[in-house]
Amino acid sequence: MRTVPSSTTVAPAASNIHKIKHIVIIMQENRSFDSYFGTFPGADGIPMKNGTPTVCVPDPQASRCVKPFHDPKDLNYGAPHRAADASQDINGGKMDGFIRQEIAGRKRSCQNRFDPACGQSSKDTPPDVMGYHDGREIPNYWSYARHFVLQDHMFESNSSWSLPAHLYMVSGWSATCSVPGDPMSCRNALQRPEPPPDSSKKARQGRSQVHPPDYAWTDLTYLLHKNNVSWGYFVSRGKEPDCRNDEMFCEHLNQSSRTPGIWNPLPYFDTVKGNGQTGNIQNVSNFYTDAKKGNLPAVSWIVPDGKNSEHPPALVSKGQSYVTGLINAAMKSPDWSSTAVFLAWDDWGGFYDHVKPPVVDENGYGIRVPAMVISPYARQGYIDHQTLSFDAYLKFIEDDFLNGQRLDPQTDGRPDPRPDVRENAPQMGNLVKDFDFNQKPRSPMILPEHPNPGPVPGKG
Image (tube, rainbow, N blue to C red; front, side, top):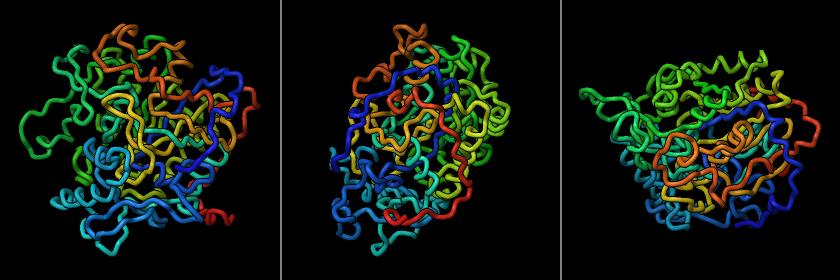
């Protein structure tokens, strides 16, 4: 691992977290840290010597070891990203199973007609999962990293696919519940929480009576509602591709704020239904309206549709344009001076990363993902090397708006048997260190939604 300066060497400014009155969490899809920022200056990226990677991953199909390579393609394919795939990719810390899992996933996936990657790979083509992008393909993302905060040890909260990741994003747990309405009947489910009906295998095979899931454990909106803290979950209307946990590609399903799904699980939480808060799950157009009027909720989550998600085979450029539009809207808002944007990707999507994830419990952490903090109070050009997960977002929200109340079965009023209180994990850092609340709020940095390619790294 490359030696990088520690974030702890920078003394945090006096913390006045309550200057942040609006938190916007933008969750994109399926990229590892090394696939987007593996060559970013100063980050814990792909190990290099004289500009050449010193690491490689075995390709069992071609009897070779493949080094990470620059990939200028706008369309990528990735690889499977189940819990079993994460375990094989990590391989006890060797971080060398990515190509093997890509090959295995293609063999499974190519049995159906929805996989656009079938026939794309051969012994002469570098495996897609080993490719990385840089400022040439994602100039806006690299600009945000240069001017605000890049987090180079943000790990997916759970070591699995999209649905568990989104459940962790709003509740700090992924479970399945045997008794409707009973939080104590819920049991840990890293790989197989109950899926939405239209994404289940039975439903897509036309088999009878598939019941919607009941997420009975406690999610963050319960505490927000209890403390009169406003929130919104903004969903992009379109198609959602991640329709089952063991497929790389599949038939796309309709998605909107009114269609609960893998990226939109909140409608199935008893707390949301019981508190009459389903109306807070809205079309993303309402986010733009709220931002323009200076009426952002205290907490916003934003999820994309398939085309804007960066989830293979969605185009990288489309996702970057969509995210830029969201951030521009936040920056143009009257609320900008009190806003923090947390941008991350929900899981690694099968793409290579060289850092072994820490173990916090039986569910994770998962493999590293890109993540940034964008705010008028964010440190400028700062790389945060703290160990983080999406649980850090819950912790920051709770510290800012709930006086440090946690999703803790012992104290939150709705006991459930979750294995631990993730916000209190001792190895997890604190997002407060990414801010300087003593500085004058920084002006917006409006970027073009369709930028020209960035310069070759080190030459511009």
